[in-house]
Image 1 (tube, rainbow, N blue to C red):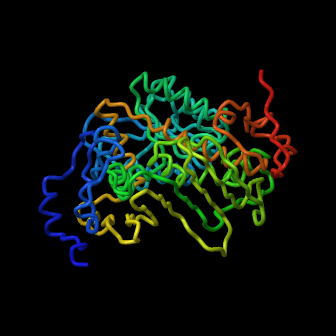
Image 2 (cartoon, rainbow, N blue to C red):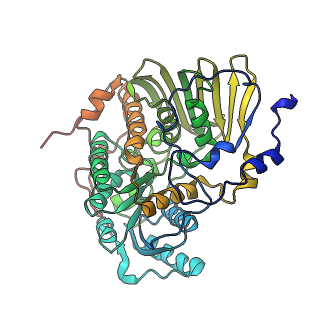
Image 3 (spheres, rainbow, N blue to C red):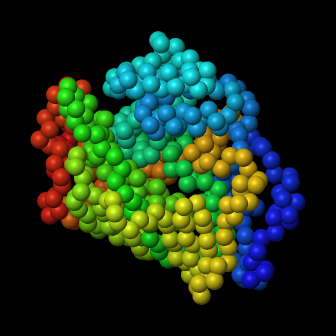
Length: 463
């Protein structure tokens, strides 16, 4: 229909005032990146009033301000990517410290930064070992990026907050209830110190999702009645054990396949999709019943697939589905149903339909590309983080991410045991994935076994 088409000339005219800004507020330029049609004349009843929910400012580049010294903990693929994202997000940054469990990772990234960016991280600020995170935090940095295997993140965050450092935490931010409680306690301390904490749930800084959230808060689909979230994709990667590798060295280099290090893929990867639902609804689950299986993995002790039914606080249901097996039907998206319509997102697109299936709103990716130079959410999350730091205005995404993270943990433990898990019981649980003899030498590998439903997990004794 002609009235559903978006006039780019009118868009550019109406948005001419929107440019680079360092402001941090509750409205953003993303609100103009829409195409509307079939909802004309329909009175919307907002779920929340403007100002009651957070909409990030997402300019191409963070505003100029104080020079900031950055330290990276975890120099592997995601850590290397995150430091480049950070450097692309703002001027006036200096990378002054690198840390990793392994010397080779530090050396590779140090050489790459010097070659690509002319950044020469001093040798005395390159740290190696399981305690390298403390040395990075203590090296004089203003802000740290933590991109280690997820198991380590709670203690790293706790230490960074104690030392008064702003933090970017890759997702997930914990793998068990013990880590969840550490994250929540550290978050409260960080807020009290006016620190800025952003997490790697990058959909919170992806304009299609941000604008979708805003439309739903404005009442575009009515009251939310349920949803389905998916991450069904292929196998990631694995590292076969090489001669000379110690137990811990192998597991850490193959971390994405070990549940104590990654939390299993429902936590490590699918948390993104679960997070969209907990973010858009503002709800946490009260219970979860799930199942899963291991069929194709060749290393580690994780499952290959999960399916979980979550009951949320107000009684609505979320169905969660994830799989990492090659050769199967893939689907990575989220669907939310409301009383007046539905919202669907897939590969960066976002669409709202009415109850008759008519498209009434769509995010315009092409207009975003015309209006903005920076459309990468992995960079935009650093733009927002740095703008908050320079504005001296606290942001605390770790608490919100922890809710989605705990939901994923609930789903995992239900699938592992075959029992219902509850928010109340799981957040209080003594379940702790820390190996009893964690070190870089020989470890007792007998405890790293694949879960069998019907056998409850054994909680770690207190004390």
